[in-house]
Image (cartoon, rainbow, N blue to C red; front, side):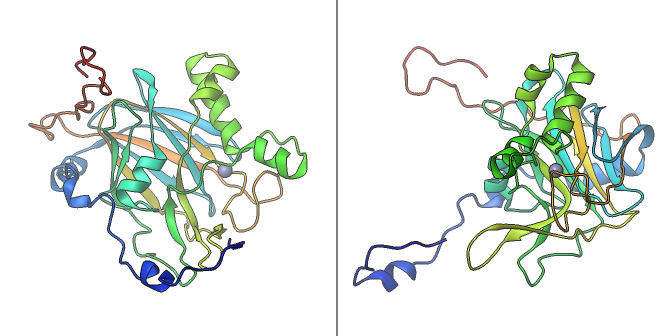
Length: 292
Ligand SMILES: [Zn+2]
């Protein structure tokens, strides 16, 4: 939104006409071996499933090299996904860096990157039944990493409400139940999400974040290859298909299914989980370099 109070300089048009450069060319990133992941997936057998009830969240574990699938099962529903290193909750999904590396919305071949100092792929998307959607006439697309997660604090800020089934609270309860951490400690581990099946964008005139009814239908799914041992949590957003609002019980909500699959022994021959980032962490102070 513009509230300009200063006159444009004489060369304003020339400054605006400078072409942008892509910050992080994707071809500079280590590329996932999708053919290997897919051939391993073809051998995989189901190992478990968790049905996430409406307006709630559940945790699930996925060992490195296994696959998990999030499916729409009853009606159009958006899911908010958190991922942690199963052995170290301080390594968690980094939505902002993932957005900088892959763009505003994720699909097949894109990866969910972890926080500093590890900064490595946690999961790689290997299948997306909504990949046909592309970008609509409003600038909307699916599976964004631009939203945060709906939370009770913003609702309170805007309307004074006390609502307890926002994704932030759902994820907090699920993690507390899974880890036996006190609620306040678990809350500190909840983080910005991958908005699974959500359709979002920025309005071209004001640059404001918008959402619209998700195109997801029962049978649609998003499938991931776990690059490291993962603890995941998925919240069924109280916004349902996110066509109108969050932070209340007014929207129609549906469950989401999480299934896990194990590839056959030997199907990932030669593959190893990615190592943590190689930066020495000395930050310019001499004599403090550490092996990552
Ligand atoms: Zn939500």
